[in-house]
Length: 419
Ligand code: DSN
Picture 1: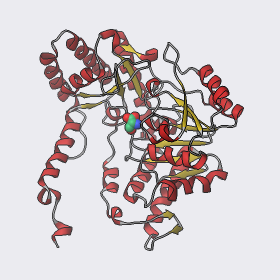
Picture 2: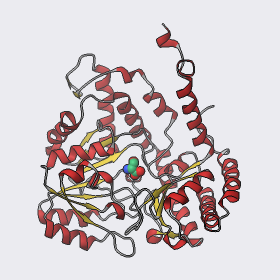
Picture 3: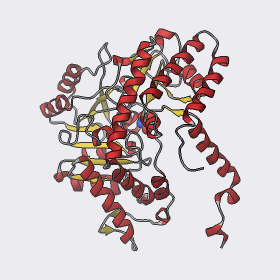
Picture 4: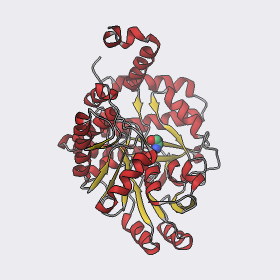
């Protein structure tokens, strides 16, 4: 029957062409978006398996559908591996994304109207931590902490705001804060007011796994993360805790609280990501991510580009374009035409709207996954600085294509996926 034998190229040439073009785009450019990575072929196989057909609800050993033996095996392995990788007593691998994981944690601990203290979005926080348009911002009373003039998290302000607003939950972590976070300061602030401490480690979970970043698991009540950023795996979320007393509360918050059936092929791919992250190769990769992010930051600083806090402890760094009189939207568009893909990003006290912004966010996770090292990331830093200079001088149209040729020549030495 054709349904089981005809290939995508024949069934749907339009979608096939777009997917091929996307693989080529990834092949021929340097991916610097901090939330992206390049997964292994093994991960792609797990995602494309027949497990996509299986429907289950509930948890291994307690499903609401039959024929779940292989699903149970896959999910149990994913749970065991996540717990082992991060030294946690509890793992839930079902959240479809980091935002879903956060929503489940809110459901477990909060009622609508409760106060939550989180990092301001413009200081590097995340949409799902209480931004106005997000369900978290609409349903909860959000208090924010931010960063000092030097770009570092203002712990005194965080603790003082906790005292005055008495939140039921404090969130540490975000999506654009480049420095390691002092989780003990957060624990102390949470304990002082009896708040639950949630750490969202989505952007540096891989560094935590490799022991290259402070570990929030023993300190926080709950930790959320994604597998698809620095962990180099499939798009999806997960939840960890060292507290065994939270198992029922957190499990029922994910299902049936905020999700129904499990995306089992994604859970299989998460298991693969956890498996890969337990190898010595991954430790080497994670060290490379950190070294490369620091090399990129150092090069930009050397070229007089303003890097917030002057560097990074994570895979990401944030550039303030205001001293260059450029906006994030303009700079990211020109960089893309040079084969360097990054995202526009707000910076603290940004006068521009989120669609424009005054900043750029860069990440080293994807470039490192294809084998780029410190020499290449230093070169990338120079290319970025060249593009920004050319944009200011009105010469982007001639400079960007030339750099794109150089980018293509460099990445051709670091191939991805069989052709
Ligand atoms: N959390 C968003 C980001 O940091 O880009 C999407 O994963």
